[in-house]
Each structure stands twice: as structure tokens, then as C-alpha cells.
Image 1 (tube, helix red, strand yellow):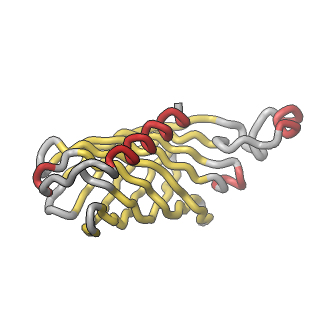
Image 2 (spheres, one colour; image 1 turned 180 degrees about the vertical axis):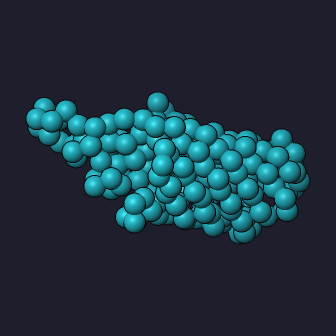
Image 3 (cartoon, one colour; image 1 turned 120 degrees about the vertical axis):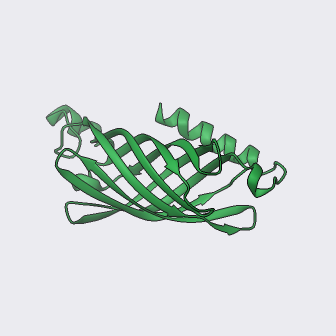
Length: 171
């Protein structure tokens, strides 16, 4: 599923890179590539992901996000997939509320480790519900937007912080 999502997103982004420019008010699709860091339990690790938003109006949109933090949870890795609703109180500011799943143990350990313990890096692979609040600010840069982003993820009794930048191609 994740590989198909990644391939589709890359194909869409490549196709869109050659499409014509529309006026800002006409843009409805906002695919992006995210690079940043996630802090879980006072441990900060590199994160990357893909995101997409469809704007229904100037104020409202909806979309999905896929993120991966390979070194989180002592190397077990965390993969996040969520759907979000977005509110745009101003032209550049975006506030989001999302719900999805976090998979711990998303990074595969060597095959012999699986045989011995049946888990990834000492952590059993499992999924948990995730709630996210987020804010980003779009800075136009030619045909693209640079969006500094901050988010808080709530999983059970844990809160993680995601900080980074998205490179977005609106069309």
C-alpha cells in the first residue's frame, strides 16, 4: 500500500511539473514532499513523507499524509498515515486536524532477527490510532511553495512533535 502511494505521488508530481500555471485562486491540488524531524520521548529523529491537499474553497480543504521516521523507538521505526481536514484563515496560513494510524516497527530488521524474536529491533510491530493538529505557512517561491510546518501527534498517552518543511507544487 505504502509503495503504491509513493509511486502514485511521484508520478503525479512529475506529471504536474510540466503542467501550465493557473492563477492562485484556481489552484485546488497541493501535493508535497515533507522533510523534518520528529521528537518522541525526548528523542529526535529525521522524518520524511508525502502529503496532498485538495482545496474545496479558499478556506477549506482535505487531504492525506504519509510520514516515516526510520530511527524512532530505538530503530524500530514509525510510519504514519492520516487523513486531515484543513482550515485556511488567511491566504498563507493552514491549520489542520487529522486522524490516522501510527505503525511502530515499520522498519524491517535483518531476517535473522525476525526469526529469533519475531519483532523489529526489540519492539513488536503494532498499529495505534493517531490524532494530529498542525499548522503551516505557505511561502510562494516561483511555481512552488515552501511550507514550514509544526504538528503535534497524540497516540495513547504520548505526544510527539513534528517540525519541518514541505516543498509543495500547487496546481
